[in-house]
Length: 140
Image (cartoon, rainbow, N blue to C red; front, side, top):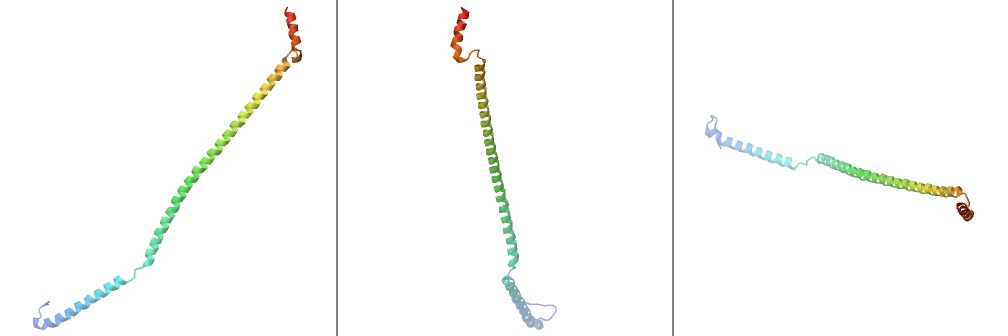
């Protein structure tokens, strides 16, 4: 390599080349040493752990929210089914009560009709054959 800046070649060349080679060699070894030190240096793991912890916490919270939503929906459905079952049982009980009341009312009406027919007779049932004979005599 030749450097010529207006100086005579014979004075400048051997000393300048040796000095330049020495400077470039020192610079190259400094760059290599700095690169090895920079690549060999431990990276800050706390930041990565902190970020990964936040990501894990976010996923966990999301999973809890999703599970809570599903559980809430299942509980709501179960609750509605229970309310419908209770309402159906209450309706069936009301219908049975109405049917029993209607049967009791019908039995009461039948009993009253029987009593009314028994009371409305002119003659007691034991005397009825005699009353028929008398009715036949009057009709003749």
